[in-house]
Structure formats: structure tokens, C-alpha cells
Amino acid sequence: MKNICLDLKKAAQFLSEGAVKAFEPQVKAAQEALENGTCPGNDFLGWLHLPSSITPAFLDEVQATADVLRANCEAVVVAGIGGSYLGAKAVIEALSNSFAWLVADKSNPTILFAGNNIGEDYLSELTDYLKGKKFGVINISKSGTTTETALTFRLLKKQCEEQMGKDLARKVIVAVTDAKRGAARTCADKEGYKSFVIPDNVGGRFSVLTPVGLLPIACAGFDIRQLVAGAAEMEKVCGKDTPFDENPAAQYAAIRNGLYQAGKKIEIMVNYQPKLHFMSEWWKQLYGESEGKDKKGIFPASCDFTTDLHSMGQWIQDGERTIFETVISIEQPNRTMLFPSDEENLDGLNFLAGKRVDEVNKMAELGTRLAHVDGGVPNILISVPVLNEYYIGQLIYFFEIACGISGNVLGVNPFNQPGVEAYKKNMFALLDKPGYEADSKAIKERIASEA
Image (cartoon, rainbow, N blue to C red; front, top):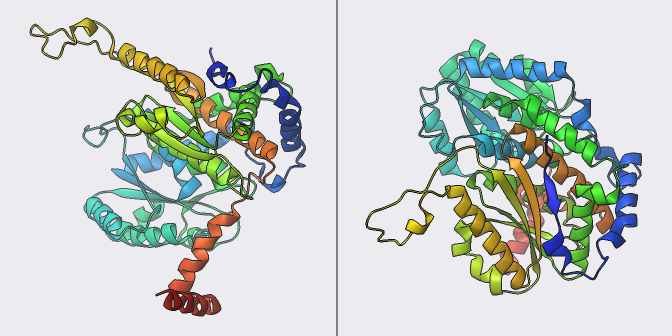
């Protein structure tokens, strides 16, 4: 079976000859630091060998819980934010029918996501949609006090109990949380919810292969065993003993750092399949939160092509040359559609008659890569044989291990996120949260003085 593969030729040409290979010692040292647990943030390395450590019995337990939700719910709401929802949403969106909302699929519940914003209209419209429906909730939070998720869970818990009755609600509300402490753990134990543990040594953005991601993905009807199998295969491919020239994660980490040092400060993740939009969103959190610190880090952006070629294409082609692109290319779509002939040919497209739509898409992809390279934009290509659970699993682990290596080469702690706390402190102070009295006084005085 093929694996995903990496092509650096149209990126390496922007660097001096041998520049990528020159990073081999740094990359090797960075990966060894991960393996030996000697790198910054070494208490958050539980993801490193997670795929190969997941047992069939554990997957059976996750699947059995998903089956209970699937049997009793028309909809399942995943309440979580950041890494507690993006990975699951990325996989589900990649594998689902693009028009799932409109397709009468009675075999699978509708998977909804909430707790990732504080939009009053969004939450009101969500609760309206759920009225009269049998629904369950997967509450994902280590602490149970993250504002966005906790607020949402309080609303959904109440509505679920009112509509389903408390006994059934206990069967269809599941907690994914800390093993021993926190508000969500206390609530789960008190109410008797089925629960799964978020490992202490796995940060949110690396947690998609824990119950954080596996349970929602299983609820959506997808094969979590194949997802994990793909990730486990990529764990082998990117192992520390794999030679640099055969290790795609090591090479990706090397060229990213080489381009960064050459002044390429922005990486645009590009896809030509609309289903991969949220895979890019997950990737943006993974790399942005891991590398963006100590006044360092490549800014992760994303575009959906060919759509965004009609909005961002001009800037990418001719704008400031501080960017490079990483293109995810799906070799074979899951469906076949041929372009029809038209007798009048008013649009002049009969030259495409009989061709697969994907052939047109592939030529748009190749033509764009060539144009952007000619315009001074280095291009990295990641080829994925087909969009399914196995290869999505490979892609997830590839990006995770490359992120850990790349962050270490950059010289930051890839596993903390100190900057995320700044907005929370201000928000709690402005809301007069108990314990923030001094901060509340100070921030209100500042606002008054700046008025």
C-alpha cells in the first residue's frame, strides 16, 4: 500500500544547493530530543507514540460508546474549542458528503460543533434546531471551566435533560476530560456519565487520536481503526532511525526552517478539495500555537483553491515575496464525473468533453503551482493517494511529528501556549469574575483613561 509522499523540488530550488540536507544534523538532534524527552515541554510528549500504543480493546470501547449515541440520537453535539474540536471536525468534514445537511441519511446522526465561540445568535439557533430532536452531547474539556465550552455545555445539558428525560440524558451525554480533577470530571462522576480521559501528557492540538477526536469521528460513522492504522504506519515511516532522505517529516521540518531563515515568514496551506478546508484549520492551530512564540515562528495561513485564486490569487502571484505554499494533492477522488458535450458550445468548453472533472482540477493545480513558482513562491507538494480514514490518519501524524521536530529546530517550546492566556485574563477581569478584582480595577481604569 502506498503512503503519502513529499516533493520538495519546487521549494528547494529557492535555497542554495544542499541547504535542505544541511539541516539534517539539527533535525536529527531535534527528533532525538523528542524521543529522549530532553526537549522543552517534555511533559507533553504523549502523542509521540500514541498511534502504536492504542489497543484494539480501547478502540472497541470508544466504538461501543459511539454506537450508543448513534442508536439513540438524531444529532450529536461536540462541545469543545481549539484542539478539543478542530481535529474531529477536520476528519469528519474530509470524509463526509459535502451536502450532508441536505441528504436524508438516516444511518448516521448529524454531528454538530459548539462551545467554540460565544455567539449568542449561534447558540440560540443551535438550541432552536435541537428542539424536538433526540440529541446527545460530547463534552470535551480538561478543566470543565473553559468559558466558551462550559457556557455551551450548561445550555445543552439542561435542554437534553428536558427533552430526553434525565435517565436517557445520562446515556447520551459523554464527558471527555481529566482523569481525576476539574468541573467536568466532578459533573461526570456525579451524574454517572460515560467518560473518557484526556491524557495529561497530550496537549489539545495533538489530541485528535485520543477520545477527543476518536469518539466524535466514530459517532459520525467513520472507521477509527483505519484512522489509527494510518497514523501508526506514518509513525514507523517517520521514526527516528529512518534516514533523513527517506523521512518526510524530517524533510518537511528542514525545508520549512530553511525557507523561514531565507525570509519566507508565511506558509499557506493549499488544497484543491473543498473537503479539506477544516484540515487546514486544524493545521493552522497545530503550527501557529506550537511555533508562534518568543517573537518567532512562521505564520500559518490557508487557501481553498481554485476558489481563492479568484480572491487571493493576485496577492499570492504578485504580492510581497515573504510566502511559501504547501499543497495537499489528492491523487484519486472517490467519485467519477465526466464533463459533458454541448451541441451549441456557447461557453467554448467542448474541448473538455469526455474528460474527468478531476483532470481539469489537476491541470488547474499544476498550472497554478508552475505560475506561483515562476512568481517567486516556493511550493511544497504533499501527495495523498485517496481521501479515506487511513490516509487522513497518515496526514495527521505526519503533521504532528513534523511540528514537534520543526519547533525544536526553531528553538521554541512547541508544546505550551502562554500567549493564549492574555485574552482570558482581560475577559475575566472585564466580566468581574471572582478572584480577578485587582485586574478588573486596573483594566477598567485603563479603558477610562484611553476613552
